[in-house]
Length: 252
Image 1 (tube, rainbow, N blue to C red):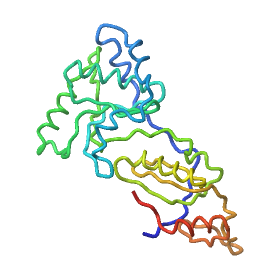
Image 2 (image 1 turned 90 degrees about the vertical axis):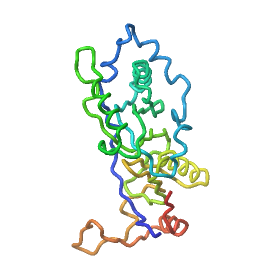
Image 3 (image 1 turned 90 degrees about the horizontal axis):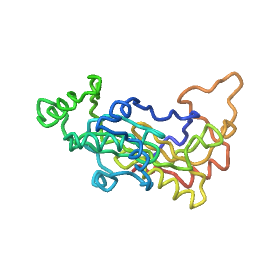
Image 4 (image 1 turned 180 degrees about the vertical axis):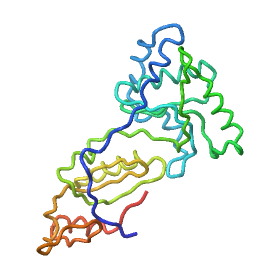
């Protein structure tokens, strides 16, 4: 499949949106402090928590889960603390997908999220809606069903490190496991001598090569301005070489 070779990225790429408050909601509800436990979680830096459990979904459309919270930075330890507390309270299907930088607290796996057809899904949502904080508020006011999430693996080849706004897209991944596959693909290209970068989007992961300015294009005719979708002629020998060696977009 031929691909649109150029992609203009914006710097910086927006970071993870955190759903704060859950750690505070549950702290101390077992009668003691979670401080020591929180410090011990993630001591061994896993590539991805529970990765083996979900490997069977790689390169497939994954099942849905109920997202209870997202955690980033220092708060990722709180996800594991909450997982333990919820399991102790009888919510056995809770789990965490994450690494040292990012974590998702989830509940259950569902191929169908229609409550009329899937009784277990409807019952799980009802049970989760009854979980209360110490002051009586709902612990999970928004119970969202979403495809099984992936934690973003750390990489030194993030697109935000590209030296200029234009880059040549050479690979796209959009099935489960895409984030790690994109990071691995970029690393492989780096080992081969290419200046590869990774962009982790909401639903797709892209691998690109190089960072270029508008000088790679032939100048526009006098009085004409660049327009969205306008195909501009390439004059850069370096870019032409990349396009020659990567004629087709690698997809998954």
